[in-house]
Image 1 (cartoon, rainbow, N blue to C red):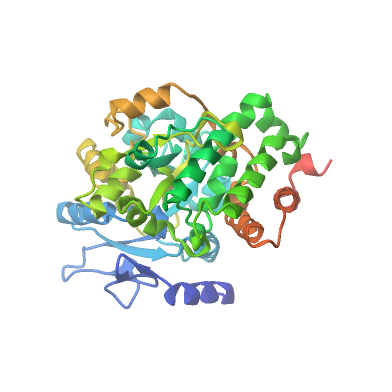
Image 2 (cartoon, helix red, strand yellow; image 1 turned 30 degrees about the vertical axis):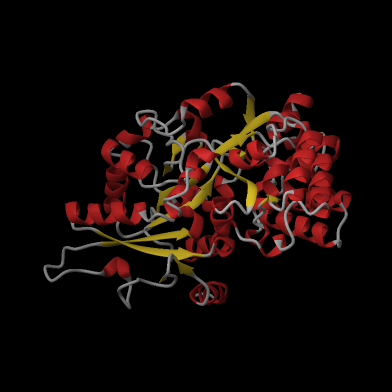
Length: 444
């Protein structure tokens, strides 16, 4: 085992508590190699399943399905969960060293699949599997390379909104804002009432980045062929003035106290309590996040919560992200056949339904045969607005620096960076990453 792998695994071993259960290195119930675990008759197989924290639903529904799979087939699944911030590097090292789990989860999108998992070298081709043709065709590019499908994925398209407390708005006589000035005025009145206008989970690093890149539909509307020009290095992000506007407005909101006093120590996980208790009025989340609030606070009336488009830079579009995390089979593993059998099990209609029902924060699956959870009210609102692909799914070298941008914004909030410097830093990183990848459009 090489030194880099040992260092990463050591870090993971010391770090993670998921749902109150320690997880991290090796098997959760075996001291040896879980993939070699056998029963007394020598036939039982245990598949190792590696993932980052956000790769598996916090409800534990995938683990429950794995238990059902074990009852049906006798094949066990050993989940090995690592911190989000470490998983991408750890997975690459494990793949390169030949020590990857039988099944692994990775963030998947058309722009970064090759750099993340190198499918031709490490991943089993699943193109001929029956269930592939039942997935939404829109998600296939995220798990495909050179016309071959390599993974299975479940969440439907992601769309982020401001989830807001209707009761607070009604009490203060407020209307849903449709532009920045209205948004600012709404937040000021909420703050004056003693309630924190917006709960921002800055501690998680990724959440504060959403306003910048989930508003990609608005950027595209104002700048035709934008993503193509950015990917060909014909223009840079400073040609999108609305992006700098959003960054500057985020800074203004922080300075005005709209995130509350302790927002730099806020975590996304505590947003549910803050919203359920009426301490905060708004939080950026997917529509179905309201079901997570209900699950944790059964007495809370989830009908009190509505959604509206993020009005940064006067945005009135919805960013759509067709990509999500996906599961892949290690083609160099010892149990490819059994791993594919698990994928087949997960893709059964009854198990797809169990997954949607057992994951409160999920609005829909990328399997058209399963009906979504969107209410008629949500559908009507979503259908009323223009939609477009989010920046990170359409523009190269954005998603790979997502967590770094989160740190940049935190630096801006503390005064060490200006909004303009944040934008320049993002642009410089794109250039560095493009040159590192030997992108021909950056080496003309």
